[in-house]
Image (cartoon, rainbow, N blue to C red; front, side, top):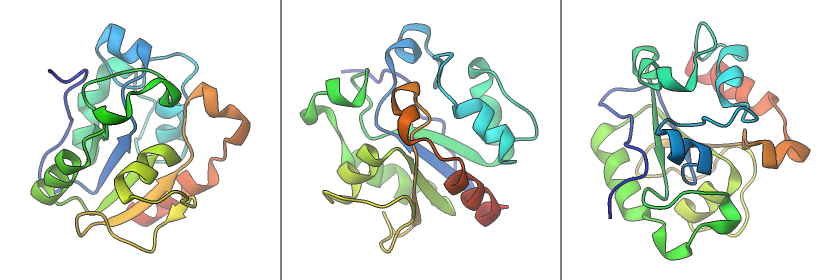
Length: 163
């Protein structure tokens, strides 16, 4: 089965952001965080991780700023509640992070972190465990479906951490 969206990774990144899976709109158009209701691109700019607001089609520019993208589930798309649980591939994620060795790995949303870390509960912010030997954070989801629990402050703290 092929990947819904390719990873955006290379060695030496300061930050890799890992979601659960591509959303339906992202899968349809072939670019990450493509739904207009998703806060991802504006949040990166607002907290200073990028110098301006990128459009979803400019995702490859993230590498210029030392940021990569991946997902726990690469072969299915949709809302977290609709993802087949057997499609998650933590071993693949671990191998990618071990190979690329970013400074920080941050999960975008709790579900991705719960799956990857093997924990039923996770807190937002820096974690007390490392994933694949890398400093690990959990951030609030930028999806419009998670707007009831949205909080930009953990994103600001991460941006301050990675410079």
